[in-house]
Structures are given as structure tokens and as C-alpha cells.
Length: 331
Image (cartoon, rainbow, N blue to C red):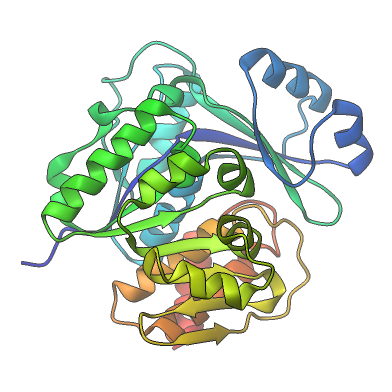
């Protein structure tokens, strides 16, 4: 039987608020540029106060959510396990996720009291994205959010490295992985961010376990994880933990391992405006490609093109119309 879902994901549910900022403002706020930093609610409110009411866009987010929305918009079927509160942002998140065509464990009436997580995405003039994340209730994501029937009815599960700092979240990924492995569902993992590799290596290694079917990471994460100084040496080392992988390299495209050969895929030349969501879009387009009969090079081409499109505009994802047009252009 054909599985209902192409990809089942588990990850943090965050309402993204995106701002345009200067390097000087980041410095004044004491925000480290170019990385994701976890903050408490007080610090999030402090930064919000400095940013004011000038956000450019609000959307349901979180790394894995953006990836699954990309899968859905391209025409795939996706399910997302996550945790939001019964508050204003939780209501918005649920509506936005469903509107994007993603099925989910959360509903309009089964949410706990608390504060839904938020991510302040600050895009500087060089298009670099910097994130301050207050996890809120998603810090308590656990096995209770898993839907075993949906895992069993999927081609892939997709785990985000951003869950590494959460003990309960990490246990949820391990449980999802165990269910998948026992029933022939393939396992995909994204390292998510250099800080996850730098500060939560042991937790990531548990998520890797005895190996994953496909790994997504960028060049900096690959070098950091393997301890290599050269991307090709790092790629050779990644073959020990992943049956296949895709390493994104910004304007240099992507380096893929399809299980038999290394493939370099170029990316279209564009003028970046906002790099937020590029990696998430790449993973979503790639997963769509390999679950819809595309070869690794073809899936890589689709993913690089989709990521190149998303960085030319403000926001972490394309519209439904843009994704469908992208598919038409690829044919």
C-alpha cells in the first residue's frame, strides 16, 4: 500500500516574527549575529521592546515546519507533530499550518494553557539571518505529541536538530525513530544549526543513532561535526553516519552523496535579500523530489533552485503559486 504521507516531521512550533535590522542594532541589543540563540521570556521581551512593532512578516514556523510546508506546497503530503499553547499565537499557528496543507496532532481545542514559542528572525543588510528563540510550551514537546499511526503511514520521518536541547523533545525523536526503524519507515535528520553541533553534540549523536537514511546539513555544520578542515574530507566522514546526505554550500550549491557516488549540484546565481529558511526550503524540496521519483541530482537541482528563490525575498518560504511555478519551470 502507498503511504498516506511522504514526510512525517517532529520539531519545535514557533511563531516567526521577522524584522529588518542593522548590524549596529544587533550590537546595541547584544545579539550574536548569524546564529540561533535560545533565550528566556524576559530576554525575548527585552529584544522585542528594542525592535518595536515593525515586524515585516508573521508565520507559523520552526525549522521542520517550514520544511514540511515546502513539501506540501510542492504537492506532497505531510504531517507535523508539535506543541503550541491555547493562546493567541497558538491559535494563529494552528490556522496557518492547516492553511498550508499540513496535517498535525494539534487541534483547535486540545491545547494546554501556556505560552506558544516565538522566534525573532532579524535579517541584516547583508541578508544574514539572526534568530532569538523563546521556546515557550514547545520546550515540553514529548512522546505525547507523537501520532504512531501517522509515522507508520509515512515514507520518511524528519527530525530537527533543534530538539537536541530538550530532554523530552529528544526522547520524542528517539521514540519516533524507533517506531520508524521497526516498520521500514526511512529516517531523515537535519543538524539545523552550528550551535546545535557545537553545544549539543552528544544529544545529536543519540539522534543519529546507528545511522540515518538521509542527513541534511550545511557546510559549516559538516566541518564542525566531523572535525575536518575540507568539505570533501568531511563528506567522506559523513558517510559513516548517513546512507545518503545533502550538504548545502550557499552560492556554491550542494554536495550530495546518493549512496554510491558524490554529486555536486550548482545553484542559480541570485541577489540574496534574506537567507532565513533557505536550508528548510532545500530540505523540503529535496524530500519532495526523492519521494516523487526524482534522482538525487534532479532532487538536488530542484532543492537548490527552490532555496535560491526563497532567499530573493523576505520570509522563510515561497507562496503556493511560486512553488507550483517552480515545478513547471523544472520540467
